[in-house]
Image (cartoon, rainbow, N blue to C red; front, top):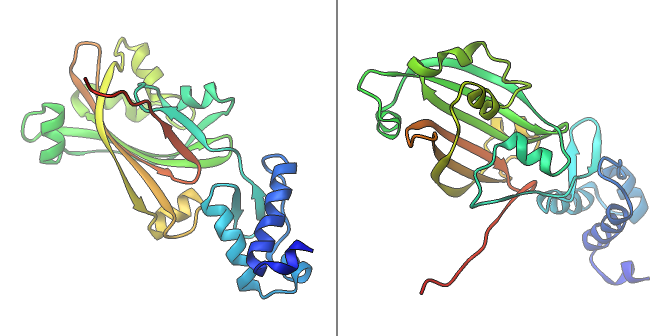
Length: 238
């Protein structure tokens, strides 16, 4: 058989890929111990194959529960301003959040500059884990001028879209500019996102403007790299 002519971890990976292709998101896959028995390998060899699939975004590992077929990577057009909630709705997923903290604190100089705030101004800072269905997708931290947006401290941001709440008050997120960088997950980030420590993160830093052109939000979103992708189109200049 072909599995006898390739390294054991590759044979396990090929077997699991077949199971993934034939299964549905959320299906339970064999445990590492079951793979050890099936392929007569050490647990380290079985784990190597599973980790490679997790890094590729094909499986989701849940400590104490097992390894599951992952949902396909979620996607967003990079040139389109779209809230996380609406992006999930477009792809048939339900968006929700776990609140980490809501605080009012002095604005750091770089934040004040981006939000056109006077020295000594405060911001309301909102930190959430963003979920697609029950799968953690991103860590979000946003800061808005406290004198204008302190009312958000009493909002149900675990179940409501921040953009929708703003729009209900006539504040339309209209444009933004920012940067994309990469990093690896620290221990606390890996725990919250349910990914391996050192797993890839895609970091989006964004300044958001309303319909009048005024800056209203500075934010950083740290996406689980194996679960999220940004699409873009290129055109030759000139």
